[in-house]
Structure formats: structure tokens, C-alpha cells
Image 1 (spheres, rainbow, N blue to C red):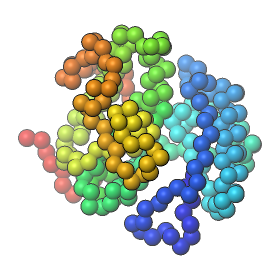
Image 2 (tube, helix red, strand yellow):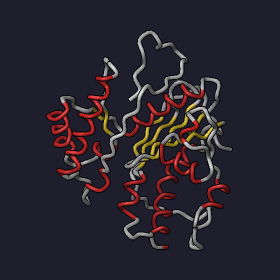
Image 3 (tube, helix red, strand yellow):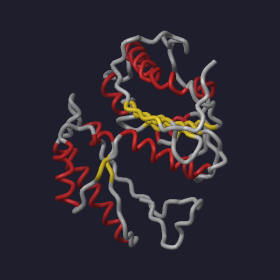
Length: 268
């Protein structure tokens, strides 16, 4: 919850949270094979929204926008969940498409780094989807939403604890297959000056790699590099090389949109 005080909606001003409310709902534990949310999970969502609204009232928030992400948006019983939230909390959350979500996250990243940051490549891994966005101006030139959320991949591929070598191998193959579809498109664009990981998943990976903890504040530099992560990971010998071939037939459906640009560099 990040309310902006009146009179401080200046263009270019960094918006910082006034108060944070976290209500764990753990929807990943209440999804069946078809992605349907159980009654218990629905109740936790409705209770979390009601508590958040109560907290917003204590801080005199005058305009409240509620949105759900991929776990509820893609659920077959989505409308039932939203009906229950409306009945308990008195507000009906909206939902964005994957591409709309990617675009808004890109705008937040662009606003944070400023308009002179150059071409940005933004990656956002949520529970149900992963967004990939490239842009050099206010609007992105390319945005895609892929079904590569951390929770979704865990449920679909990592059934054992710890995961077996075969499960990890199949997961890597699936991820490479999905990313190959956007990789070819990104090769047509400028090389980004910055690559930004905007989600909590990347924050946790950076923390495992030695980045400063959250209590150090939002202005501390946090980076995650391949060699740093590999030194701290427990990757077994079955890890495929970076240039491993990708299956030609992809089970991954990518929702993407391209925005017109003034000049599109062509590959040599």
C-alpha cells in the first residue's frame, strides 16, 4: 500500500511507501491441477483484502485500487473468488492482462531510474507469470508475459523435495524453450544499458548472493551476477551448458505486444 500525499504528485518525484501491509495467503497451496482456487484459499484472500482496507482507513487513504495478479486472474473460478472478496471486503478487485501488468511495471522502473537511464530491460518473476519488457522511452517497445512464475513452475515441475536431477533438467529445458521465443525478438533491439529485476524473487536471489538486506533501504545498490550466483548455488553436474539446444515445438504460450518505435535496428 503506497498512498501519495496530496500536493506531492509532482512529475519526477520518487514515490515511497507510507506504510506496508503484508497478508500471506499462500494461494499456491490451494490450487488444484487446473489452477482452481479452493474455498479455504478464497477465504484467505477475502480476509487479506478486508484487513488491508482497514489499515488503509487508519492512514486516511482516499483512493484505493485493488488488483489481482496471475494466480487469481488465470483461475477457472476467478469470478467466484472475486464475488467472495466483494461480499467480505466491500470492494471488487480488478485484474490486468499479463502485458498490461508488464507495461505498468516498466513505467515504475523507468520512473525510478529516470528518463536518461537509456534502454532498459525489465524482468519481473511473480508467482504465476514472468514479464519481460524492453524500452528506451516512456512506452516500451516490447512487452511479453510468460507462464514462468516461480510458484507455477514449482507446482508443475518440482514435485519432489528436494527436486530430482531429472525434474531440474526438465524445468531448465522448459524455461529455455519459453525464453527462446522472446530472445529472438529482443535481438532486433538495442542492447540495454541496464537489466532490472523488479520482483521479490530477484531480491531473494540477490540476497542469497550477498546483496544488502531489505532493512538497508531502497537506495542501496543490489546486484546479481551469474558467477556470484553459481558460487553460492548447489548446482549438480547435470546442469546443461548455456548453449544447450532448445526443442523446436514449444508448449509455452507467450502473450506479447510490440509498440512502434522511431527506429528499429536490424540484425546484420
